[in-house]
Length: 240
Image 1 (spheres, rainbow, N blue to C red):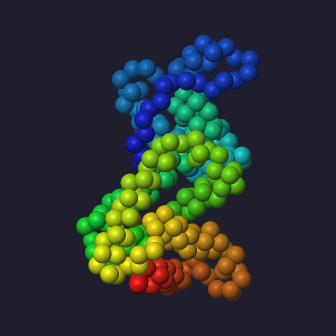
Image 2 (image 1 turned 90 degrees about the vertical axis):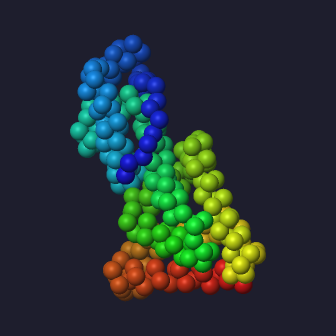
Image 3 (image 1 turned 90 degrees about the horizontal axis):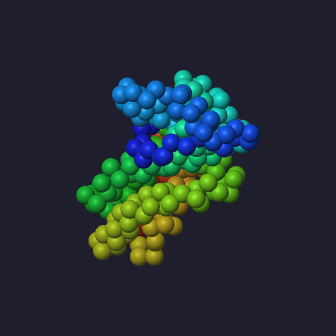
């Protein structure tokens, strides 16, 4: 998952008993300062971010280890602090990156160029498919909710990236109302929560649901059936 991120100022984590200048020199010595290092900086950040998403989705913020993230990325541990300042800083960027990925793909659907019903069908199907293909997104959201959203609350970037999508959804709803194919009493935020919720619950609880009902709800056939149901369910709710 590749997300364009602005490069923060190089700072190192504050470690008790270590002078600030020593920490700075150690972090800088972990990365060469010549031309190739500059070219490799983006790749290093990307590797760290991919490793962080995997580690945080497996073990949550509390259980994840910076040592393991650095090892998986194949870089010096000090580079985590060089680029992200702290474990918490890396976790926030990981959350922002997974949200940015889904927002970018939603925007690429170009809902404004489609008829309202087709636009909504595309959005609902995409939401279902994205969760099916990205279990790490579900895991990270579940962990952040256990933490009462404390990291997301501090991210202005996350707040900004949601606004354009809601505006696009509002425009789609308005066009549907004007054409007489959608009800007038739906707002975009509640609609999005409902669309995301009926898919999210299916995937976040897939193992327990499969055990309760005695059938594999993760099979290809079950996914196709559920996807069809989710689209029909949401579209029927929207119709006047």
